[in-house]
Length: 216
Image (tube, rainbow, N blue to C red):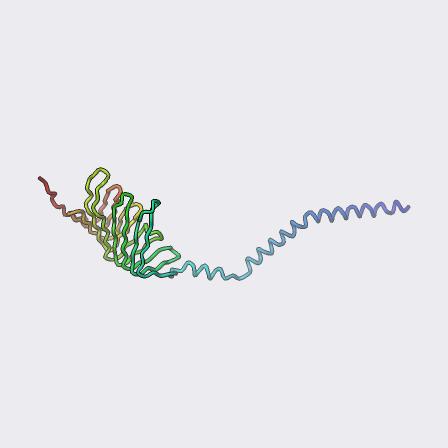
């Protein structure tokens, strides 16, 4: 009699114990899910200061100034690649650019040829490889001899805007320019000059004066 009475109780205890064991297996997963939901809710509903910081970080305000400065860059062999001078410069963190007053840029290409650029103001990228010259802009490439021994005459570009690309040795402008090549003189409405390939493209109203070459 007592054995028969205990049998259903034992079965119920076994089922209850099995149920608790299964819950114990899944309980950590359930708790992790609840914690993840709680974290998500807090992230969506808790006010943060990040928005104000992000707005300040993208504003076009200078974060530092330089006066009477000089910045040099070097190639892998330790030789001077470019030198950038100015009376004052302002760095803008949102574009990582320098706005320079009275700039003077000296740049050496892989063959050691020197190019000098000046203007009233300039806008340069971080490493000085790209410089926009604004106001009384002048870019001069000194005379040099190429790999075949041919003389490259001195080049001088003038205009209110000149865009210099030091790494690719290009000078561009979408505004009127004046070009002096040796004793020859040209004017045009725009310019694209490639010093490596020795290709010059003058567009718009192009005028040129070619001086006769001396001969025997």
